[in-house]
Length: 383
Image 1 (cartoon, one colour):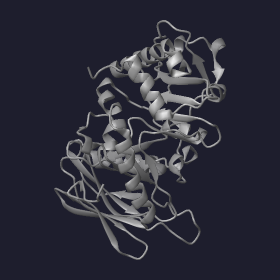
Image 2 (cartoon, helix red, strand yellow):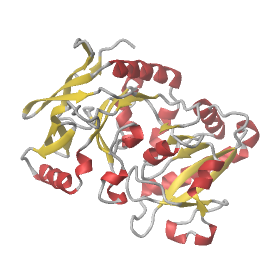
Image 3 (cartoon, helix red, strand yellow):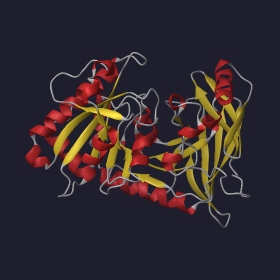
Image 4 (cartoon, rainbow, N blue to C red):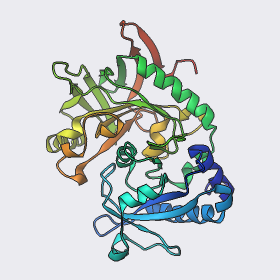
């Protein structure tokens, strides 16, 4: 069965991912709830039920786990990677409330108290909590596995050999750390598009499915190395990121013209191009190139399922928007409202962008030499 983790598998997962320490006493599973502004959907409802079952299974195996397990509810924040609300609710067991409007205001506890009491967190939420939990982990001794959009069909990805996944991710992180730039050649129906990403002044991150040390947060399932392109924050040293970035949205390939790590123009095209141009005009922070990600899970036999949590781990992806949670400069204050904060990944695998191919990716070393990284969408580095 691939649609349900057994209690024994859940205990093994927590122990493998987090390696709990003797002084750690509790684990929290965080779920966000729908409300009048953001109605429920079947996947979201099933995810909350799955989270409740996980907590029940873990609580029943308290002695084997060595941790108390609690389910924590909170009102959804209406956007991916927006800041968490001030308050949350500890679920006492039994059926879940249908939505956030059914929660008792008098039972609310400060979210900070929840984080302080639970050094280990899992967050199978509708809206990604990765950014705020990464920020919180800078000052609190927590570690969090964020699982936005998690579905039962992702469970096989939790059963992978994460020792091998982590090893491959580490190789890619080391290559990104050595590089001062990345040259990417895309091919699309309109021809070729070349993009240079400035990787100076940055450190890459490894998300290999293991979170043994406090002060970190990352996705689960995992399997990527990633880095924020340099955004030009050093006075007198502008970002060198520039070129054209094609993104297939539906049946249309949209071309963004990139200057100094920002999309400054959407080239004329169809209706999707018009919508993207309007979004850039309305939310300038959306134009920021926030991430170059290199996923490895395609080599383990996984395919896209339509959820970015898993799909981005399959290969190359480039994100727009918020970057401060990855070590960049663009955060919630740069957007027009908390609800407008976004970090949107564009994933370059054939199933997701069939009309855009990654013909070549080379990393540029400080001496100007090139390290071939990808050819025709596949890695050519030795793992």
